[in-house]
Image (cartoon, rainbow, N blue to C red):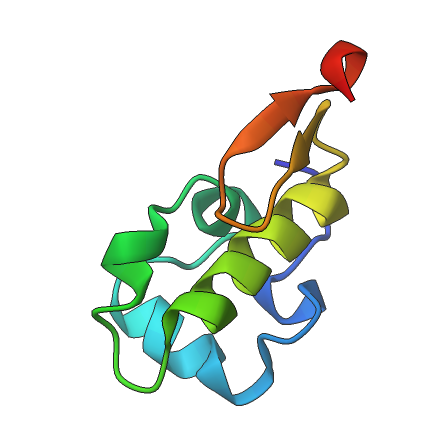
Length: 79
């Protein structure tokens, strides 16, 4: 995990931060690695929001793979 990076730094998390933390997702890295289907089980988080959270967390971490809209990744050399 990148030092100094907080869950609230992920674009779009905002008020859902508390819900994520209660579910055990308390770091940017955990959010980046979260399963979209699992996130949709949390109160107030739909599929599009879950996908956005995972994607934005990966971007924030500077993931070497690019996140896609379904939460999966595509290697850079295949883009």
